[in-house]
Amino acid sequence: MPRLLVPLFMVLSAAAAEWREVWRDDFNGKELDWTKWAVEENGHGGGNNELQYYLDRPANLRVENGHLIIEARRDNLNVAGVQKNFSSARIRTKRRADWLYGRFEMSAKLPAGKGLWPAFWMLPSDEKYGGWASSGEIDIMEFKGQEPHQVHGTIHYGNAWPHNKFKGQTYRLPKGDFSQDFHLFAVEWEQGAIRWFVDGVQYQELKEWSTVGGPFPAPFDQKFYMVLNLAVGGGFGGPVDPETPFPAQFQVDYVRVLQR
Image (cartoon, rainbow, N blue to C red; front, top):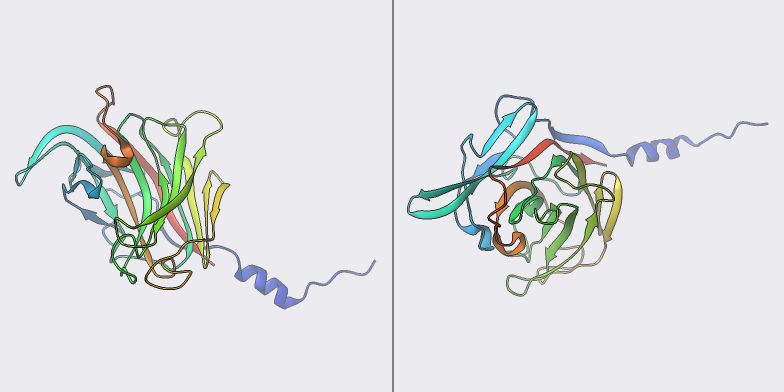
């Protein structure tokens, strides 16, 4: 039989469409890589009435045994006159790295306990269309410690608070819960489409949104940076139960970014 020859341009097109790694952190050093991450310090509650003070100190933020450790503690802090019952950490790639479109992945183990709220998410670098949430937010993974078998994927958009909108879905783990082992959380963000995955399983695709600042696909047509944090309490996390174990750890094995 004659051989079926594939045109060269088709081979090149297929290769060009593959995801290629452009950024990665395996957390294999002795401390956080400051060329990749910046640390936020504040006790403002994140606009959600959260109960933690974010600090840059080893008790709350460190690299240990090849993992990033973000640790929430019940330690009754008073920092510059701000009283908080809990401490934690929040890091971001802002002013280090940002991207327009790509696949964003994190391998992590999440802390169980009512009121614990780890998240892997993205914000716009320049807020091209106005303040939150006119310029958008992509929540790759959010987790409520009192619901350890499921995670949430969401986008925020539309207009400035309190006229903002959001939409998203929940993924339920078929067996066990997210505090027992490491799992892979990912988003594929392309022009006009955002898809969510857990352990390689796609559970959501969104193709419709809007903003007062510009035509579709705004606001998701500008560069975004990544954020990792472990909040305590707040409107999403809910009240902290007296039985919630502290210290609580959000453990990250790696984060990486791929683009076509």
